[in-house]
Amino acid sequence: MESPPLYRQLATHYLDAIRAGSLRPGDKLPSLRSLMRQHGISLSTALQFCRALESEGWVEARDRSGYFVRRPRRLAIATMDEPAADVAPDPAQYVGIHSKVSDFVARRRQGEVQVDFSMARGAPELYPAEALRAIMMRMLRQRPNLLTTAAPSRARTPLREAAARRGLRVGMTLAPEEVLVTNGCIEALNLALRAVAQPGDTVAVESPTFYGLLQVLESLGMRALEIPTSPQTGLSVEALEMAIEAYGHIKAVVVVPHLQNPLGSVMPDAHKQRLVELCERHAIALIEDDTYSELLDADAPPRAIKSWDRTGNVIHCASLHKVLAPGLRLGWISAGRWHGRVEMLKYTQTRSNEELAQHAAGEYMGTGAYDRHLRRLRERLQVQRERTADAIAAHFPSGTRLNLPPGGLQLWVELPERLSSATVFDAALRERILVAPGTLFSNSSRFDHYLRINCGWPYDDAIDAGLRRLGAIIGECAAAQAVSVRKAA
Image (tube, rainbow, N blue to C red; front, top):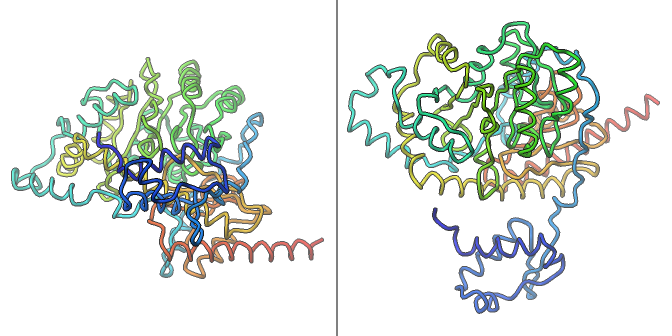
């Protein structure tokens, strides 16, 4: 694997010292000449190193004095409370989500949006478009009838081989034939749920959770039972166990173990193993949505939940939508003991995916270029998240809370004074700023005072101005709410 640039290696070295407390806020970094002499680097590399730490908020430049360690504003903002895990789920959570999501989608289309913080998506320039295009062009020259020939349903495509091979890195042992290619992870989830449950059945989900999953469950006539989920460690296994004892008829559990959407939490390995054992013990299908794990800031990828599966009870779903090519809509599913049923459901629902995209993505994933792309993507997203978090800490009102995840595309923000995200959404949209209100991520109203903020676009003046104005809008809405409360009293 190709090493990071020298300035990035040096930045990581000094960041480790800052995080360990060896360098504290107010300490001065070595001068540019000292850096050049101590580390044997050029002036250009020394400048790149200092500017990288400055852009990420770890140091500040003082006129004619040099660079000094600073405490990033994002580190001063309060973290979120852990959810109560000893309370039985509220049956009112079964109420549907379609109307809220439909209203959100319709209203955001009514006018031109200038700054969009609502989508968990990366900017087009973050992805290797040219490399994928070159592979596709070469393939079309080699196989001119590729687009006019029906794709075989059980072909051993490069994508299936690449997915199986990369599964080894996260503890899974899969044959390419056990990997079924889907139209993104959302089709994989549809197939998994249809394979293990029927209309009217109850499915346990994280709370909050991705609103697309709530839509899928409602469209299938299934009921979502929301389980308390920690911003740090993910779904509460203890709360799930309570729910199983209280309800006893849960058919499946759907969980995003790594960089959960919208919280950004990461389940510890011990929690994953306990979850697998709990679901096996109660004959509950466990569906793993592993869309985001490649975006985790870590030297090695985390173990998949399915790596603990010994009975075929875990269905593993994944996608390239966030990590390689949003426009290809490629995902896959490894369905364990439901493989045959899922294969037939896929055939019934959408038949085979077209081959060109599978070949291009699979071939690219089989090269070292893919890991280099992922490393660059994680580095750029980390800078974008941290700059966004700094802006939120600087411009949002006092009392705002924030969960800064160890990777991914988004931040989960708690508004002060339990301010309604629906109110903020309305006010921001009038100024052509789009946010994702917390009401979308639950069938209950408990997350109305939260927003999900996208960090997938490179931080620039437009985004900075948008966050500054959004903070002012939140302050204005909070002030209006305080006046209303005083009048009511």
